[in-house]
Image (cartoon, rainbow, N blue to C red; front, side):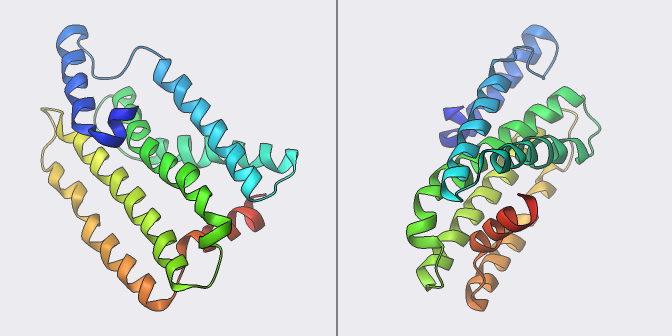
Length: 189
């Protein structure tokens, strides 16, 4: 899991080794999924504390994060490769944004991001820029490691668009983090 944050290329080199030894790309060991689920729970507890959610609102939030944010998005992504590998790629790509947005960002939310200051917008939007860029890059690495994948460089096309949206959001004074935290508190829970 640490390699997903600091050296994602090594993760997909291991996938190549698995294909050579076990004739499948997907993981057959549920340890990653168990650790991933633990991180989802831990970071959701952090959200509940920061947003001051009651126990039942926390449960609702946790179920939303697991079934909509994580599994739901992973299921709607169309692929022409084995489902297990595609879901592994999604979970690998989802982990760094989870840590960035649901862990690191929480330390800055109440003290800094939850204000109308320029630095609040910059910091909050930068967290999102880094998280979404990580997701796209790790997804690109996952699909480009497959010999049957062609034109995987097209997966990187959204990066300049996201960077443009980032600049426009800063210029327009739109704080993505603040908006989405309000969405979580008002719409979901």
